[in-house]
Length: 130
Image (cartoon, rainbow, N blue to C red; front, top):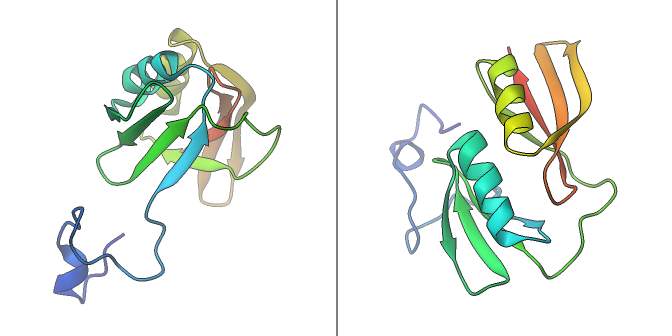
């Protein structure tokens, strides 16, 4: 979250402008089917995409950018990306409707609740809420 004491951090950072030092800037995830991946994340979370050939698409979620690539297969376990949602039940339903699979039912943890899901490529992500 942008720092409250810094005007430089409160502005939106765009391509070509100065980037905050030592912050995650971009993430890439494996995808076996780019079209199916775009349909899944577009319908579930409303992400937008820019294609760079048939084997790569870049996404933007409104705050962070990343990409999906056919270059490497999905790992069995790896880094867990966690997405915030105010309504876990609605997010879970959208995931199921879009072809995702719930792999860990909603559970409580200090600070909130979350569940894990698998996307059409086998990537495991989580959704949390307070």
